[in-house]
Length: 313
Image (cartoon, one colour):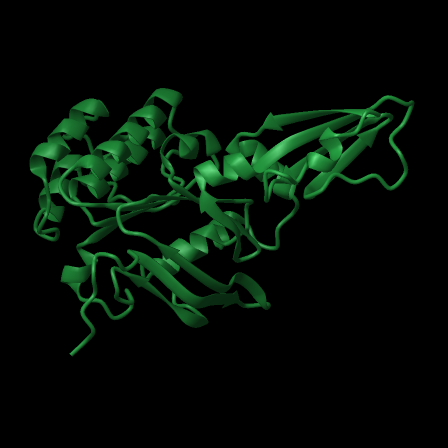
């Protein structure tokens, strides 16, 4: 008999999860992550960081090279259909049956998902302004995205994995998507959302936890509030014609110097970290807040060429 799982245990969990593709490319590299139940976890990273590979392994669509991945306490490779019906997935690459209408797909899925909510599907149909009688193959790319989100949400999942769900959506449709995620979280029961996106402003509206992925690892994980509070742009302006040689700002992640002005992205670990600068009479100190996108750019700078394209990893 297996161990009894409690609601305090994570909805999504990986242990030393690894995926190595032919040629030795480590798309996911010994990843350990825990995502609490009922939370919205935003996953961001450059192309080739391993986000899609991670999500595919979580869903049991790609076999890990090593380690394990669990959704609601079970490895999806061995989970039965009833367990699988507790979660849904919107892929970066949509594969809706082009010959079926949205109404026909809904009719098919309601037999597979015990929690299927036809009334909710109807509300989403009106909200997204979709024609349920139209074959999905005749829908635009944005309409197909909306249809995929409708199908994933109407199943009333306990866990939903969204891989670039807003790709191809206009700003109004993206806002509707975010609103529906909020509605899903505040409905009956708790739903856990893993949301991978390049549109960082969308994450800032809903994410409680943010994981920044690079080269197959989560290099930074924190609540959105913590990231904002501890990462700042610090500017030091010296009274002379240039900054002293070798001058550094405590906690600097990245620094640029132009004449008397030294600007750095700084990780603030304590309230007293900048006290040594504040007391000096030969300089002026300015501290500015950063948005999540600025934090991401500060950590990684301009996108570099990756070994694999994101849709391959």
